[in-house]
Length: 379
Image 1: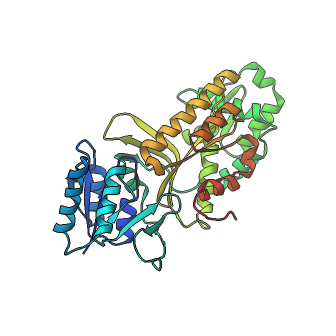
Image 2: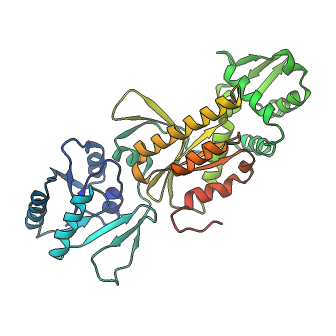
Image 3: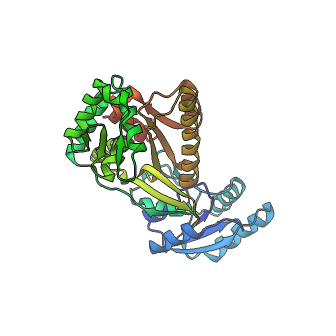
C-alpha cells in the first residue's frame, strides 16, 4: 500500500494529481482546524483513495512529535511525503523528519506539471504527470461547485465562417461591431430591436448587418431587427468572441493533449453559496485551471471603457485565485483595444491579454497562454 502524507493548503494543488499518478491508496491529510477540506476529501474518495484527516500541530516541537508519530504508526506501509502543498514551517519539518528517517519526499511543480523526487538518487528522473483531472474535480478541490458545464462542443461551421469574417473586420468596422452589440443587448424580450434613424441611414452599418442576415442570425424588417433566436442574439451580443475562442482551443487540443477538458459558459458557485459566477471559457491543462474572459461590451465613453476593463481584470484575478488557487492561470481577450494602465495591471497580476487587431493572430496567442511556463514549444 502506498500512503501519501500531505499538508492541506486552500490555495495549493498537487495532492490529487500525484495521488492519481502514483496510484496512492491512502492520503494522510494534515490541515488547520478551520480549513474546509470537504471538497478535496470528496474527490479523493470518488477516485477510490482513502483520506484520513488530522488537525496539524503548528508549535515547532509539537509538529516534530506529530510527524514522528505518523512515521512510526505507518512504518509498515510504503509512506512518502508530498511536499507540493502546505504551510512553510510544517512542510520543512515534514521534509526534515522524512529525510532523516530515509523516507521518500516528492514535489509536484505547478509550472512544468512534473513530479520530482527530492531526496532520492539522481537516477530517479522527473516524472511528467498524466492529464487525468477533470474540470469539476479540480474546482471541487478548491470547494467550488459546478452548476452547469455550459457548452463542450464548438459552434456550427456556418457560424465559424461568419466569426472569421468578423475577425477580419477588426480595425475597420469597430463602430458597426459595437452598434450590433448594443442592439443585441438592448433588444426586448421578444429579441426585437427598433433602429434609430441615424442607424437606418448608415449605409455602412446596413451593409454590415446584411452579413448577419445572410448567415441567419437576424432578420431586418424596415427599421426593426429581429434576432432569430436567443442563441443568435447571444452571438450578436458578443457571444461570437467566446465562440471563436472556444473553437480555436477545441482545435488546438489535437496538438496539446494536455488539455484534459474544455468548456464554455461554465456556471459555478463557491462553498454551496448563492452568488453565481460564469467562466466564459475554462480548461484544465497541465492539471491547472485556465480561465479566459471575453469582453465585447460597448461603453459610452473612454473613461467607462477603462474603468470596466480594469474591473474585469480584478474580477478575473479573483476568479483565478478562488477557483484555481496559486496554480490558476487567466487570460483576458477583448475586441476593444486595452489601455496601457489596464495592460500594466494585468501584467502585475499575471494575466495574459490579447485585444483588438491582435485577435487576428489569436490562435498564436492561445498557444502562448497554454504553453507559458510549461517548457512546451509553439507550433
